[in-house]
Length: 333
Image (cartoon, rainbow, N blue to C red):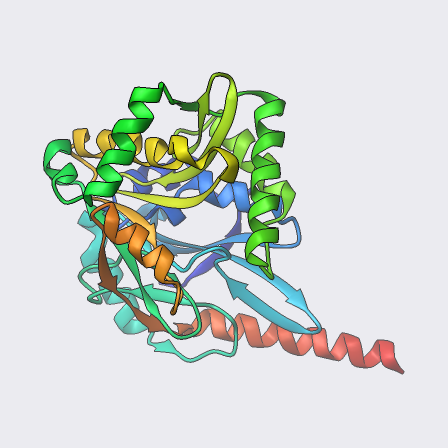
């Protein structure tokens, strides 16, 4: 077997979606909703799929990634979050493990980051920074009432207040709400001096995808017609990822963010397929974010980092890098 690399246009979308639904280890970052949102927002990134061919020409496994080339260097990465690895149907796992044993994982000079937990039996997603590799999750394999029992009293009271005040949670509707969400995010960027903010095009892409694909949900909280907060969640069959959020600081007392989060948490608890709600990681030293994730019943899950890539892709990467450097050298003459 050899690993092929396909573009989105060349991909068998029907087969990919079938494997996505059948893979117990599928993460929200494998979902076509998330992949397309990023691809539309960042056209300089080429969405690619490593495909392990199986019997009769059908794909055995997929590995989606983004690549770009700058200054002669091929960069492969998963922007806005690190995530598992190969996507495969559980019945095909023995064949995939044979493939991975044959094509040994080797170190390659790219920016690819694969995050693995309890390799190779269990592969999950995580969020990372330079020093810390973990994520915070809320267990949803319980009733919503049981989940609430693990929530801090202050957070529980905030949820009650939001309900009492009549805060409404619904899907994003129309360009006016989208513009208001962009303003909230711009205010957040300014307040926290975020060095690498999401591009405005990402919000347009998320809004577009959320209207057609339920695996990306762009939710807003409002009160008496005024937007309080927005949150974006990405779904896979067994996991939900809390991607991003911003709220209006002048209306924070109405607890719009809390109302959105717990509406999703309740839905997760009521869906027998969903195992946990992933809240993402906490940068070292951010005590406020750490308290928030603990306050909603979150607990930390550690992840290991694997800086590696199948040998065949290393060969392709080196060939492209060599070609790019040769082209630059010729142009410089």
